[in-house]
Length: 264
Length: 177
Image (tube, rainbow over all chains, first blue to last red; front, side, top):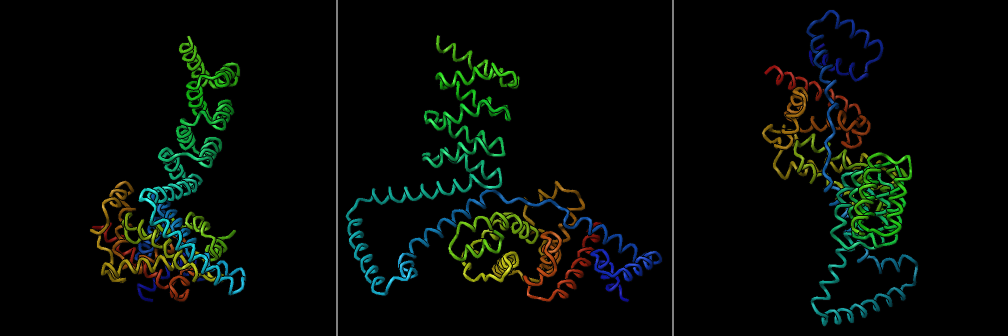
């Protein structure tokens, strides 16, 4: 048997590809062949290293870019399918032709109207479409499996105007996200929205939940800035609750002290 | 929904399902390219290209196909196209000076042995390196690799065994240097 063949036998042995009889023969040979034994030890060391290395993590931008590509592809499909959809539904040919002609006529009138519109209207339309796509991308990224992607998405929410869908998503993140940093970032994003009754209600309920003291502390700080009756009552309730964590209790006391000072 | 059904849904126009496929495969494919090219930035681009092609050629996915094999076939072709564009032959080994600074920095933080292993991998001919990455890092079975590479399972085994022996030679040459 050549050296290469012997080495291949060793590899097969380590891969578990030899029969019990072949394995026994090889083990017996290894006892009496020091050169082969050395080859075996080296291969065994290599096998121990192979596949044991850490996984490389791609950066979060990879997913954001892909989601943008996906949205563009969806938008492109929407532009090119109206006539095909009509035909697919089994409308008679004459209807499809009439629909095409109508669309062309409407298109022509619209084109003339747009031509006479100002440049500003076109720019606003383009901007609105861009913001709409950005919102959709953010909403998708907020539900990502990776905390780093969710965090980046939540931090980006501050850069656009929050609509109802985003407000509700941010509240959900504060309540349900598994990562504390993402929750805190969502709280920060909701700070300008404390006059919204949904945000207010969510804060009042969450401040009483004892699972995450750091979250409670942030909520106390935000509620204390509002200085309304319900916020003050929620903070006072924490002092009365004997299960409140010590750090949270201290923050609540400080907050009430600050509120009292400003009310004097 | 299993992953094949996800791809069938994408083929039939439900493009949102492509995001789930991305979540399932992007890390694996990224690591596949990093192990082949030792270049994070390039691997980012190549990974993105795979998913672009997945979308572009979604109509060519047939229900009897296996998504994993199909994606890795695309990945291999993307890698081969990259090599062709850069005038690198498939049988060439990566010159170790081509390992990008960022990857070397990561390697400096690893144990010496793992660094040597990566250097030995880089010196393997691309085809051998690809096989070892698929079987030892991506943990694909021989049968799956056979489909991806369009060769017999027996042929895959022979090539993998030879690649391991060659890697061992290179690794211990470097260690004893």
